[in-house]
Image (cartoon, rainbow, N blue to C red; front, side):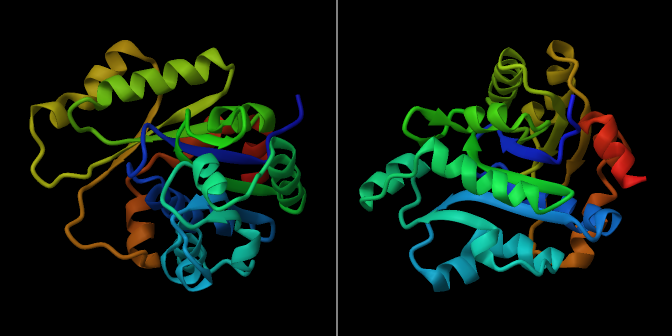
Amino acid sequence: MKPSKGLFITGTDTGVGKTLVSAVLAVALQTKLEPGFSYLKPMESGISDREALIRDSDGARVKKAADLIEPLSQIVLFRFCEPLAPLLAARRQGEVVSREDLLQAVDFHLSQYRFTLMEGAGGLMVPLCPGYLVESLISDLQLPTLVVCRPSLGSVNHTLLTLARLRQAGISIVGIVINHAAGDPGIAEENFAALVKEFDPVPILGELPYLTKFSFDRKMLLSLAQKLDLDLLLQGINSGVEAAFS
C-alpha cells in the first residue's frame, strides 16, 4: 500500500473545534516535517469576499498560527459566500464544482508536499459537490482520519455514528480528540469518554479544555498540543508517515 501523505480532520458536526485542533496539530507537527508540511481546507463557506478570507476564514487562522508561507489561494481552494453546506452555497451563487474539479485541485496540492493536514467542512455527510460528500472525498484520497467531537448531551450518539460510518466506508481512524466547549461540565460531559470507549475501541488522543478566552496564539496552541498524545497519533496514521517524522 502506498504510504499516506496526510491526515484528514473531520468532526461529528459543525462548530465542534476542527479548526482549533487543526491549528494545534499544525504548530505541533510542522517543525518535524519542514520542509514539506502543509495545511489544506479544500472548501470553506461563509467567506463573503477577499477581506473576509484574510480576516475570518479557518484557512487564515491556521496559516497565521503556523506561519505558513503558502498564499491563502493555495490553502482554501474553493470558497463560498453564504455559511451553508458547500454544494448549496455554490449553487446559490451560480457555481458548480464537480467531483473532478475538487479532486484535481486537492491532488495537485498533495503532490507538492510530504505531508498535508486537511480539514473538512462540517461532518462526514456534508455535501461538497453533486453526489459527493465529505466521506466521499476521504475515501477517494484514502487518508487516515481524526474525528473531533464535543462531550455535550447527544454527542455520544453523534460520535458513535461517525465512527461507524467511517468503518463502514473502510476509512482508517487514527482516533478522536474531545474538545470541551462548555465551562461547567455536567454528567453527560463527565461520562462522555467512558461511554464512547464502552461501545467503540477508538483511541482517545486527548481532551482540549474549555477556554474562556482564546486566540490562535502559537504559544497557547503549543501548550494545548501537550494535552494530545502525538505519538499515538503518528502510530495511527501509517508506517510510511511515521517513518517520515523520525
